[in-house]
Image: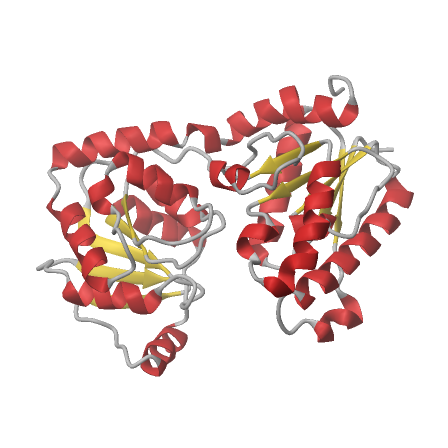
Amino acid sequence: MSDLLLVSLGTTRGLRLADAHLVDMLREAGSSVDAVATRIGFTNALRRAYPVNDVVEAIAARRAFVAASRRSRPRAVVFSTTTAALLAGDPGMPFAVWFDSPARLNRPGFASRPLHALERRQLARARVLMPHSPGAIGALPVGSAPTVLVPPPIPVAPPPGDTREPFAIGYTPDPKAKGLALLCAAWERAELPGARLVIAGIPRERAVEFLARRGARLPPGAELAGMLPQPSFRDLLSRARVFASAAEWEDFGIAPLEALDRGAVLVGASGGGPFPGLGIARALAPEFVAADREPDSLARALEAAFAASDDRLAEYRVAARVALEPYRPEASVKRLREEVLPALLGAPPR
């Protein structure tokens, strides 16, 4: 018998990595944890678009939960994502939901209303909710269970240096959602002599094809770094003056938070989603965040960041590290130990 069973939807590499971090944090907080991965199986052929995708994934998650709970006989369960919890009904034990954004926020529209109803029911039934960010908390439906902030961890990086190289880094693994065309258009309009834009997270050929389909191009001063191993990407973050985000939507966004931690200025276009990094950036230096999604607005924000004095940016880096304290693994472990586990298990963990 284990204290907790984590039901991992795991449909992307990012979700799998985040769930592995959550298991580590729960164990450090003092609980025993079993984890089960969701297997979509033959129903994967039905996954073509939302909201059908959510239903297929929710059915698979329920199947995984039922089988695993019989094996491990947990005292409580944690569903990773609201999708994993949608069809769990009353699981017969206390449960929590760990999520970046509720479906009522990132699955809008008439077709998703049944999902919203199921989600509202499960978020009210839960013993405790574990959203990743303050923005996700603010988007919860009325009547939801109590919340405890538990973000994917941002471990403390080495202290950032004050000497930065004159380049910006963009990260666009999904070129549409991450605004690759907007980023390139803004860079072309910005007056930044001698500065470079390094675009990572996407194969070169895919980026070029995406821009060509939209009648856009890679602007002068921009280069495609392709797919980088994590150490190389983090090295760029530690050297760059700017991390440029043009995302249309961001449910969480680990890369912008890591950029802030490693000393880069976060320049962003206005976008949707909870996106905690953008909120931090606005609080630190609103002039570095574009008011809208027009290329000229983002270009002016880029210019402001490159024109800022070294003293101004040194203060920015210190304030950014302070703003990231709630996202540190130590902070999450403390909240898990003191708030989440007592709520789920009814007593201090072993």
